[in-house]
Image (cartoon, rainbow, N blue to C red):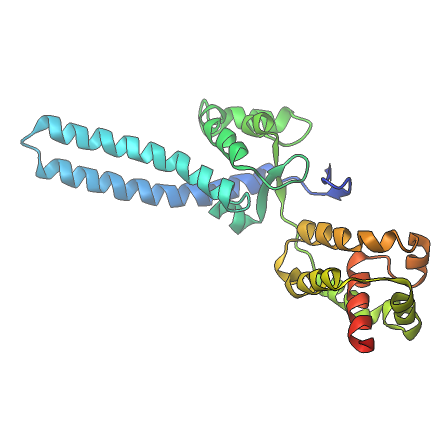
Length: 253
């Protein structure tokens, strides 16, 4: 499945299959089940202690059921809306919920998905949701269609490949390439500081954010030198060019 990022880049993701989604749900359901068991046990014990007052014991049970409902909805909303689109189950299986455009999941989208779980669950065990997954062109349940989201397999990116290229193990390490960078590019102190900050923090960024920032930082260089010359010196990746700029600046300053 190919999604288009905000900068117009085509990014390919593998949609999560039914098996992966069921596995993730069973993990989440186990966590919620333990919480429900604890609350119901506590409610039963409280009702037993106040068994002489029928109305009080009945209200304890009712309140426990209402609390379980709020916790159930709150779990999905908070986990997916504020944990990068991943509940505990999705994180364990390697799934992530994201916007169909490739952007991170927004809180309002998590809220829509959470509210429509009650519909997707009908008549039993996500019957409506399974039907949508089976019939839709893309594997998305009703909540996904309404919220404009999709569940994908989280990609594991080998950042060492990028590090090797960025350190100059490609053509960017050559003296000729360094001279090209030093002579052609005018780098302000502010721009150099931004590049240094990016290179120091890049390993803590997810792949899409890392790529977007690198492209934004090399944009001024594209205005000074055409892309054909950059490729000729091995700077086909924005991050490799940024690393070369910093190395040339440090060696020649």
